[in-house]
Image (cartoon, rainbow over all chains, first blue to last red; front, side, top):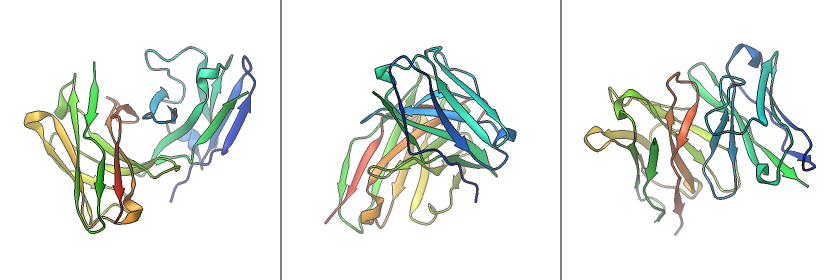
Length: 106
Length: 119
């Protein structure tokens, strides 16, 4: 079955750029999206169709997808961005989530 | 605005059943599929499947066949998840999530319903 692999944790200093990767076989041939989940809250879509930001999502969130890797980039990371991030794609009519990455801003 | 409001937390004994509701508002309910996602304590997101809100036809992911049933009441724009023969490992937060127009991503999500299975 298809799998999406994310690093369990990423750390970044405030104001710096955070990059979270999501790897899967030929992932670049699919659309990837990203969700942010803060403690005790439901997931929120931050990127869809590889690189598109929904209304209300700050410009510091961006995405890319090529080859086997999709990347979520947060420029000028703020303390409020500390959260779990999940990538998601579809394979054979099945929605697949990555295992999640805990972003720590310190 | 588009909103999904789920029913409250449930505490059930092993072997019992539970029915979680997800009431939609702010859009045409039967125009967009509804998905269900499970999140066990401290774990990641796991897709359970979806229901076609136009035809009522459900599709279940691997591992969610048999004891899990998706249903609808279109008259009140509500989707339901029923789990029977509950086990301790069913303890989790269950989310409903509306699929987007293009069908590729989930937005928005309900606030989640915690189902606790304990004797």
